[in-house]
Structures are given as structure tokens and as C-alpha cells.
Image 1 (cartoon, rainbow, N blue to C red):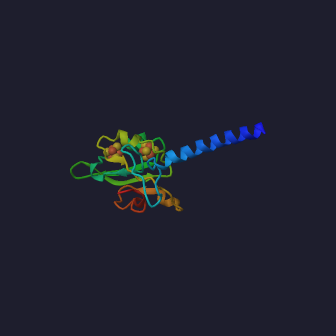
Image 2: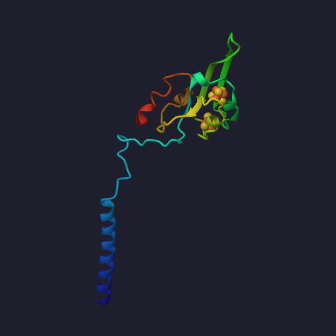
Length: 146
Ligand code: SF4
Ligand code: SF4
């Protein structure tokens, strides 16, 4: 009989503790969102996909040289004004480890990491990006909050 009373008391205390936690959290601010209809806004320093401000690039190749996974490749030609002009610039997303070294080393901030975070595809070829194409990330940008 004593054991029964003891069990009843400890059970009741345990139930009350649980209810208190529930009650406390009912009025707490929501920390989850209704994904995928709602999207999180990424922080300032978030490293998404590698992107390029083409007009700022001086084809110095520093980003290509520092990339630890060799996922960047570019070619350039000399213009009549003896300046280097980009011919091609590719980014193999499949190899990228999102270290951000290319962004850090770029002297003109031409290369940077955008805020795109939903990167899934059934087609591997889509992970091979032409950075000179202005439409390159159109398919992925639906994931990015405005
Ligand atoms: S983030 Fe790192 S791995 Fe990706 S392209 Fe830049 S340097 Fe290479
Ligand atoms: S480091 Fe910057 S300026 Fe140099 S090639 Fe790369 S993107 Fe262009």
C-alpha cells in the first residue's frame, strides 16, 4: 500500500513537471519555421555557392591557385589595351568544400560566396557551373529568401 502511494506521488510530480515544461513553451517565442514554404535568411558570413562579379575580376588566378580542391578554372586573353579579359570561368560545385579561401584571397572581391543553401539535383552535370553565365543560379535561387 505504501509503495502504491509512493508511486502515485512520484508519478504525479513527474506529470506536473512535464506539464510545466509544456506550459512554459506554449508561450515561448517560436524557434521553428514552416519549411519549405518559409525560408530562413542566412547570416552575413554564411558561405553558400561560389559566385562572381565578372566586371571586378582581373584574372589574377589567385582564387584558382589557392583552391584546395581544384574546383575553379579560368582562362583569359589579353585585350588591345593590354588588359586581361576573362574568357571562361568554371566552378565545380561537386568538389567545393565551401572553405571560402577563394573569397578571402581575391584582391578585388570579385569572387564571393552567395547565400544559396538549397543545393540538390538529380543531375550531376548541373553541379558544374559556368560562373560567367548571369543565369547560372536561377534554378537554385527559389530557395533564397527575398
Ligand atoms: S570555397 Fe574553397 S573549395 Fe570552394 S571554390 Fe572556394 S577555395 Fe575552392
Ligand atoms: S582572385 Fe578574384 S580577381 Fe583574381 S582571378 Fe579570382 S576572382 Fe578574379
